[in-house]
Image 1 (cartoon, rainbow over the protein chains, first blue to last red):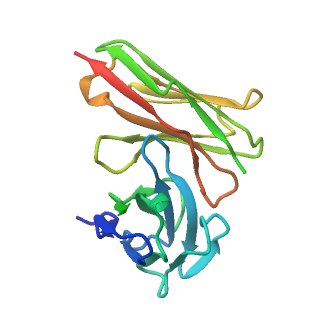
Image 2 (cartoon, rainbow over the protein chains, first blue to last red):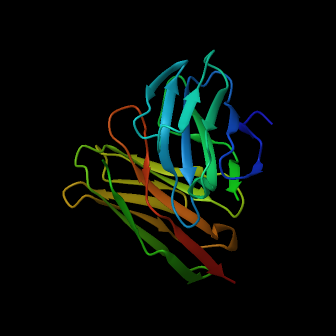
Length: 114
Length: 112
């Protein structure tokens, strides 16, 4: 499968713990986006990268959230000191170098904070 | 920021009938309007999109219309089939960064 892959698919953690999600975009896609989706809602934009540059991070939900894409390939999203309100599906998407607008989503990483 | 509202939240149609989903957006600078389909437990996938320089676009049984003056756009599915059952999301963005603002989604159920 050469689509966007995310790991882990499911994560259950206790409140206060740190979690990290990884996203591997489609190769040759230079843009990578992180979204959060809660039940019954559409995806909510968090941040995005063009190659290794993080072009916007103002929409990250709090300073507990951070994202990296160190070599312009895979990306990680870290949530520190998790809270129950962080429980959601975290979706990664990538888009082509000559961007037509289409985002290719991964299947998401579901976070449950107990 | 952009606010996208989507109606209805649920839609049940008889197989073969048409389905229409409507969205409004708040930012008049928005110029790109995609529609994504998300089947249960699956990833969202683009089904059709339209840009602000076009009023209508059609792809087989799916069409999208855009009214820039009223700031609303709609998805039309004709001759619905059971495999059209899914959640449909509209979205909007401006510029070329494609930071999409999504609507809350419409759950479409096609009754056989």
